[in-house]
Image (cartoon, rainbow, N blue to C red; front, side, top):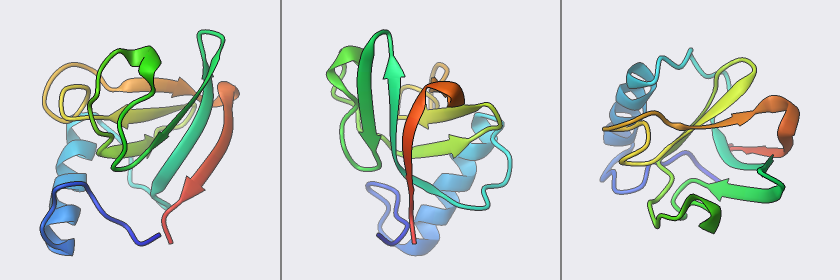
Amino acid sequence: MDFFVPSASSPTQAESVFSSIANHVSAPSQAQRVFKLEWEHEGSTCTCEIGKTLPAVFRTDEVVLAIFDCGNVFKICTPNRGAINFDPIHAVKSTVNNVEFFN
């Protein structure tokens, strides 16, 4: 899968949005960009993927815009959680079962 950010109209805009969100959540430079993440959250297996809605456990239909590898946690960003308002969703690496990267 080639890198994209939902709703970005060009690769240049996708890069700009990604960089802006990374700055907002204090994410380090990303050697690889995460496309899909699976982890355990409150006893449930959760999967999130760029361009898809968050798992039902988060009680919102927001679309995942970016996922950042931030050391011992992944920061999952939606328009309301991380991109514009509030904190991103955190997935602690010790609970992560699978990570898929963009090409």
